Image 1: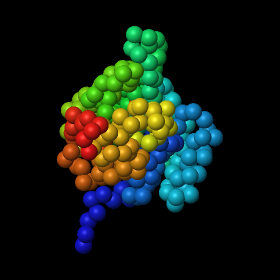
Image 2: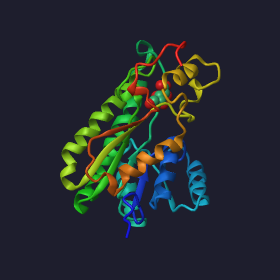
Image 3: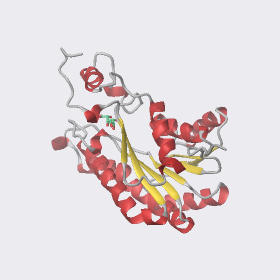
Image 4: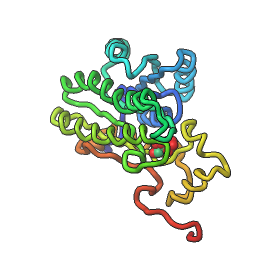
Length: 264
Ligand code: GCO
């Protein structure tokens, strides 16, 4: 009799910012492992409905909830509706995020604050309200989507780096406070992935594009599906004693100082 440590059958997973990109790829992975998907979007009902239809076309069980993850009242109302209408939330993936690429000395305070609000404060707000049920049930999984910028700086993305660096430490402190309730809180740190968010810097001939391909030992941009394994692992029994860790899925970027262009 084989036990599948990665089976998510019967589990309900909430993915914030799950209508596209990395959020969508990770959600598909969780859905294929058996989870019922709660897809959060914030931009439009139409975009959310189209995304949910796409999940269903893949044979996955998916429900869409349109709410702003930075608005605590909306978060409280929607979590209560989700748990009444679909079921208790067993897995939370805090994926919703924005980036603004502006040199720090030129960045407006409002823009800096907006990046922190979405990328750092919203994972706190959503987790604070989802974890209450997990504490009562004495089980749960929370995954915070970090970044290379949780470890490294880069020109023009200072606010994003501050938020993602903070999210790494928020992940560790959530583990410190909630692991005793048999809740596992970990992070995934994507490297450079082919998404709409990186499209402006991933143009053929764009110096950053060549730089990243050379800087990444795997020699390529990540494919969003490359995140599915880590997402399923951190959502499943297989990670029941893994806590406060950040799994960097980056093709080796953080493992190396890089190499000059004349070296293979
Ligand atoms: C950038 C990129 C990064 C990546 C990712 C790297 O401008 O440097 O958009 O932020 O998206 O976060 O881990």
